[in-house]
Length: 114
Image (cartoon, rainbow, N blue to C red; front, side, top):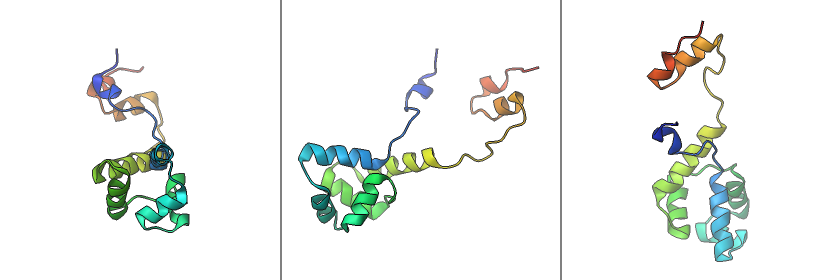
């Protein structure tokens, strides 16, 4: 059985733009209207929807004001997305034992592989 900790978050992350696009569709807003509401050029709004333009505090505040949710929600969506597409550090391992020793749960690291 899996730990509750593992089940808390999905193992996939979508760009924050997916959430924004869903909200725009629900409210029947165009990308042009959205760009105007957040005070950004259309090109920036499109890059935001595509996951190319990052969300900073100022933009997170504008999204919270315009679309709802909180500034911290939008910053967390951005953080999770960027972390999911980043190259993992120390991705190379020489053995299964080394990989197991890197796992965050001690009980997994104690498994012997001989």
